[in-house]
Amino acid sequence: MKAAVFRGPRNLSIENYPLGKLEPRYIRVQIEACGICGTDFHIYTGESYSKPPVIPGHEFTGIVVDKGEGAYNFNIDDHVAVDPNIYCGECQYCREGKINFCSNLKALGVSLNGGFAEYSIVPISQAYLIPKEFSFLSAAFAEPLSCCVRGIDNASIKLGESVVIIGGGTIGLLMLQLVKLRGAGKTILIEPVEKKRNLALSLHADFVFDPNSPEMKRDISDLTSGGPDVVIECAGNSAAANLAVSLPKRGGRVVIFGLSEKKDTMNITLQDFFLKELSIKGSLLNPFTFSRAVELLVTGKVKPDRLQPEIMPLRDLKKILSEPRKSSVIKYQITPN
Ligand SMILES: [Zn+2]
Ligand SMILES: [Zn+2]
Image (cartoon, rainbow, N blue to C red; front, side):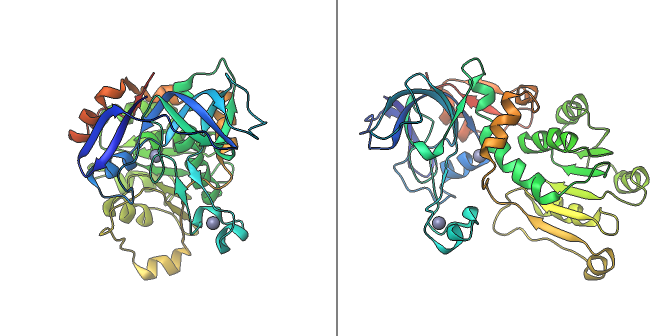
C-alpha cells in the first residue's frame, strides 16, 4: 500500500509499505479521510515522542475491508471513525477511570501507524460506526471534536453565561459551535486573522475581536458587565493564556486548552486570582467523549464543513508539513484513496 512514513526529523517519504498482518480483534480500514493537525507538524520536525519509522495521521475515517478473529461488532463495508488514543486499562490511572492520564498511552498516528496511508490496522476498541450516508471528511473531525467535548465538560458552562474563546482555528471554531449548543449567552471570539473572525460570525459568534485592537479588553468588559463568566483558551501560547486569565469576572472559570511549547508560561496576578476566586483548568485528550463527538457530527449539531477544509492527495502531505503554515487555511484533510 502507499503510505507516508516518518523516517526521522524532516524526513517523510511516500513509499510502498507492507499492509501488515491482521491480528485477532483488529480490523483493516481503507482510509477515506485523515485530518492534518498541529501534532503532525511536531512529528514532522521531530519535536514529538514519535519514533521513526511510523505512519502519522491520527484523525481518520474509512471503510472496514478486512477483520481479524473476534471482531464480531464490525462487518466488511462498515464505515468507521477511529479514536487514535489507546489506553492500557491496567495502570493506576486507568483503574481510577482517568484514562487520559494512562501511563502506557499509545496513539495511532503518533507512536503506532496511523491514517496517512491507503490502509490502517485498527484495534476494534478504537473504531466507532458512522452511518454509510455520512461524509467521511466530516467524520474525520471526530477526534479533535472529542477533545473539545472534554474541554467543554471541564468549562461547566451554565445556560446564559458569557463565554470568550481565544483562537479561531479548527479548535476555536469547533468550541464556538459547542458553546452555542451548551446554551451560552454572549459568545465572543478573539482571533487576529480576519477570515477566521468572519467565519466565527457566520457560526453565530455574537462579537469578534482582533487581539491587537487596543480597546479590546475594555470593550469585552463592557459587553459582559465586568468580564465573561468563562474563557476557553485555544491558541496555545503564553500571550493567549495570559489574556485568558486576565479577562473573567469574579467567580469566573478558565480552560487552558491549546497545546503550547515547553518554554511557555502563564502570568497571573495572585491577588486577582484570590479576589476573583478564579478556577483554571486544563483539558487533556478525549476520555470517554468519542461517541458523543460522533453523535454531534452525524446529527448535524456540529458542522465541520463550515471550517472550509482544504482537501489534498497523500502526495502533497510533505509539502504541507514542510512549508510555513498558511494562516488562511483552517484545516487540511488528506484523502489517500
Ligand atoms: Zn490532532
Ligand atoms: Zn493505563
